Image 1 (cartoon, rainbow, N blue to C red):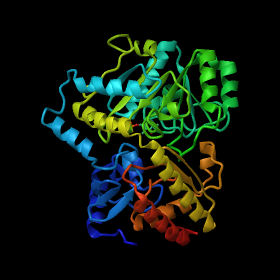
Image 2 (tube, rainbow, N blue to C red):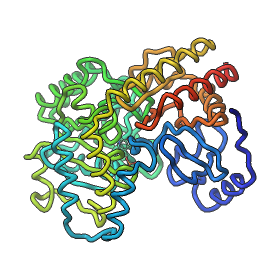
Image 3 (cartoon, helix red, strand yellow):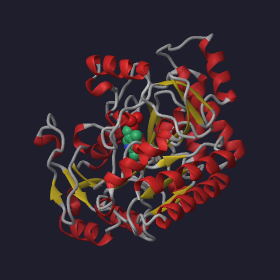
Image 4 (cartoon, rainbow, N blue to C red):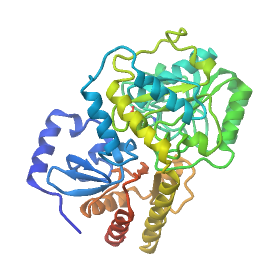
Length: 432
Ligand SMILES: *Cc1c(COP(=O)(O)O)cnc(C)c1O
């Protein structure tokens, strides 16, 4: 099952790409920088597979970093896009489809009374922060190390280490002023949050978090963590914001807030709700969302927001999910895959642990438990890089980073799981 991806055409394309695109890519993690080697170029997606420009086929566990929970090219989405295309791509005026999409989100996600559609997860989180600050009249907010909330300035803060730190930017170009009001604590450390809020809680507009971390590998909240955060927020007049850009319609139909039974004040969405087209959304309690222009004074706008192609694809995918709720089945597939992978790695003498939530899964090259990003950072990332390359050679495409979750689709069947575990057995032997 091994093929060697060193074809001349790909090498030439990679050289051309690096001349005109920084690092050869349009988003950093696609570059394979953290696992070594170089990416293949995708020609097409097909159900659970990607096919590259050389005709090689890979079982895809990235699914565009989440969006394709129905697999690549599901007929209901293709048909919805085709029929919308004939009616136009963008109008800059209201459509019935954006109302339908908003109604669907409000119906399915417990914390939503009203939503605003935007074009990306980044836009959703930066807008939610603006609304939270306006609503509370406060500036500061708390995030957790390892949680990713898009690339807007205030969120790009290095991880603190157990103490609330005054944020320092982790990217050049982010001015210190932009992150002065960003506090960072370790995930799952409720006591640290209590301490911080006991002293300075009255200055905080919000607590932002991924309710299940998916941008540091997969890290679940400990029992009581989400409940505790909600309690702290209510006590101190701050807003709890669940960034469900990744977990929304991934860990379950109603997101992590439904799965864990904790309803936040504001929610951000993206990825799955656009089915592979650029979409995000933010929403929440009615009195908070009534602050958003033109109803309220908080400005937020977008030329392409609620785009007809995006709402066509989103409505088709969300409609299918609502009718078929595939998440219990996906949970089983995820558990089987994680148990298989962790078992194979351990058998080869490689410390490993993992977890699955709905259609998301994660495996760390770390004996576990992994409860925060600081734990994940102790994983054997060099060995993961070698393992990743061996898996690609065997037609299995895992995220090219040790700190990313894996994504299943309804098209990942028993055959793909078997192929993956066979590949993992061979790969583990090579890297052991
Ligand atoms: C992907 C992601 C974002 C950013 O979304 P983009 O569409 O890439 O801007 C924000 N938050 C979380 C939790 C994400 O996973």
